[in-house]
Length: 381
Ligand SMILES: [Ca+2]
Ligand SMILES: [Ca+2]
Ligand SMILES: [Ca+2]
Image 1 (cartoon, helix red, strand yellow):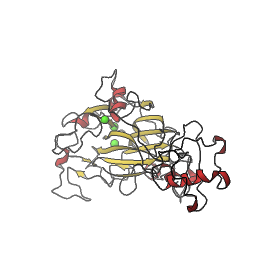
Image 2 (tube, rainbow, N blue to C red):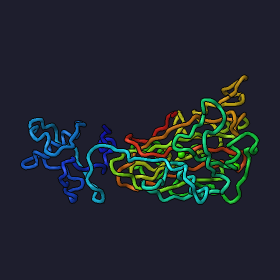
Image 3 (cartoon, rainbow, N blue to C red):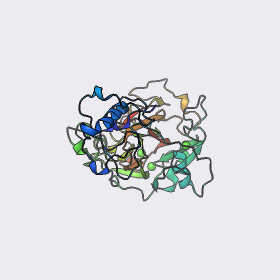
């Protein structure tokens, strides 16, 4: 069965014991009584917390003698129906094979969002129309595929230039300026500022909302002219009942490799989450930095460089993509905890730093709900 949703986040998550009885919605934040006529309720809650099934009403009512410490406070979200303390990922049927009125709408479904009959997101694309495109089928020609589609039949390409340059060799030179998309600072609610010089939001949750909880953006942003050729996909969505995390897949690739590899400033990708539990970047390389040309996950280097890939240095995995002779990461996977019933805002943003010159891009696919809570993390996957 699923994981325990409420325990991993510690805030308003799931509420009831599955018995069909209604927890008092006026009692938010107040631990349930452990005495008197509540004894039956408590023993059933204990059963739930042990991870056993409580699907049948009236089970386990004779276990009143294994009372442990006072149970953790239980919360009830008044706008939600009562739900059991288990995590259940809603069914998802990919819909990116359907016809769409325009490529922007197509992109959201390629990502795995807004399929018919599923939780709908408020969606907003901001960027030049050339920066966004939808790729059907694997990117490149390598076998086994380096970048297979992970959900449905299509994935998104988001670029700091012409996204078409990513698709195949010779489509373009990977160096396109897109006038009118140079905000410098990151658009609200994003902020490049660290929440603190010494703590992140995992160490000190009181810092949530004060800036970038991950403290990863500022160091790459400071002292530059900021974001150029900026493109973002942003959406707001209510987290479904009995879900404790969200995940998606991303791969970063850059035409800046190898010429500008190892330079202080380079293009950057930020995945921003605005939620009760986190405000800030959620996608990192293996050194805990944002994805960029110098990302620690830059596994595919298809040309030598003087820092860490002497001759011969190539990456046949990039065959048939526009990134031949350049650099890229594998498919990566980010997961982060979110809370049932809250409305989160998610922003996938890519931008040149310092100038519009030489582009970078990300592949995006497979947005989904999960049963993994906790602070954000990114792994190869
Ligand atoms: Ca897809
Ligand atoms: Ca550019
Ligand atoms: Ca650039």
